[in-house]
Length: 182
Image (cartoon, rainbow, N blue to C red; front, side, top):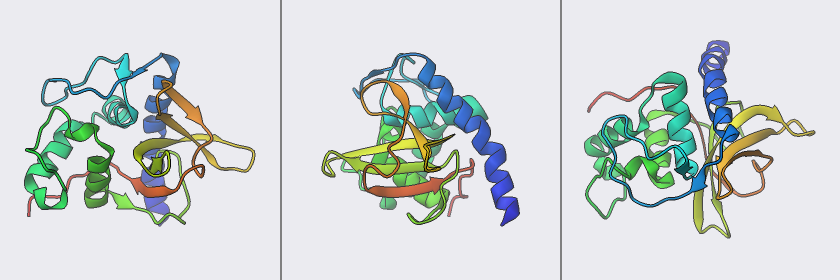
């Protein structure tokens, strides 16, 4: 167990740093569909949604391309994804629902009661359960020792005390592995 925590810390620290760096410039909330390069495609860095915080943090810290990994996983394991449309590398990785399935299938899923560590990925449903949301836990804490969350819910990328403000729908640690094709 101590090795898992050590590995988590080694990757979590640069992941948190990459996410925190995004709070230093304004990112206008924009979830529109864009045609982007594949692999390593991104929309302009001055726009984005909550998923873009996660995508950019993994890409910037560890050269992990969630666009490509989610796309490959959706092609290999389409039965896991409830997609009423054809797999699309321009947008699939930018949807909370798809990231939840990807992390569940390829990451380490924590129970909602488990300890929360910097670099953990957490999902919620905001606004009475109508809006899926995702964020990264920071290495900064509130006065009660609860990690602050780095996310974008419409006001740019911020760090806020929201971990337990909404019902948690997922808690993940993902350290850059993709399961081999079955």
